Image (tube, rainbow, N blue to C red; front, side, top):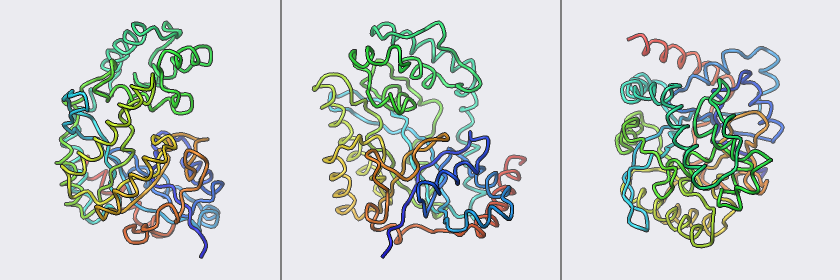
Amino acid sequence: MTKEIYGLHNHIATLKNKKTFLDEALKQNANVLAITDHRTLSSYYDLFSNLDKNDLETYKKLRFIIGMELTGMFPFTTIDGNKSNIAMDILAYNLKIENYQNFYRFILDNYQKLTYLDSRQYQQEELDFVKGVAQGIGYKADYDNIKLTDDVPFAGYAISYGLTDPRYVDYNISKGLLEELKTNPRGFRNREMKNPDSKFFVDYSKFYPNMAKIIEEIHENEALVFFPHTAAYFAKSGDEEKIRKAWENSYKLTNDFLKDNPSVNGLEIRHPAYLDNQEFYNYLEETAKIKDLYVSGGTDYHKSGEKITLDYNDNYIDSEALPNINEWAIMYSLDEMIDLSKEIGKIEKRTLTK
């Protein structure tokens, strides 16, 4: 039996030419893809409504799963006893378009404060804070030129790009900066700014709804809930003791979250945040078996040139890695997605105007 190759965690909202994503997926031998932008399915409409006849032939072998990523607050106590609310992510797969208007209304009603979080005013305040922390730690950077721009509008991205500048990155890593940021600077926000043990920690409680509420709404849509990148919230950097605690917190967070949210359907067992830690891979796979959970995998693709179907060691995320995908995934052909995308566009536009 021929192996199928998957890319199930991708963000394409900021791609100017969204067909680039499909072209890169084909080059990486993808068979099945999911787009998992935050709080919207609009990229499905933007992509599939703009395909021409040649595209239908080019991309005909691809199949698609309808997905979305959402952020919510989860109360967590670290192994050191620090209590906080972590802004965590959850993935919804197999969203039902016939139920989508109610779900999209929930999103609009419960994420209104993100307008302020995304504003230049708030992001500048956040950038001033994290720059101050970085300078206090002794990280080297061209701080005068770490600024918010139209291309880099978020504080977490701006500071991480500055700290991983080739002129300073080796020095900063020697001071405890996460080496993963060399290839994934976006990880800074999850690993540091959402990490209650980090000096960079930011409390996002006022911006996001409770995670349990989000999970309830996903199930109300009759979709599936997957817990993604479960090790993403603690930076595996610094001395051996800090790295050990980060992994222990990752195990604890995974266990606590699944215990407190027993209706979760699946785990993302392949993701760059696991840093090729074979013990953690084994733990996730065993946990999925014990708790009878489905499994998924993806790379968190955000921009052209990044991997879509290849894991941390450039191994394909395939049917061998995700053995039960055909038990849970609703896959649509290209023609079916074109029809569904039209309905998605109508629903989001209609709901926004009400």
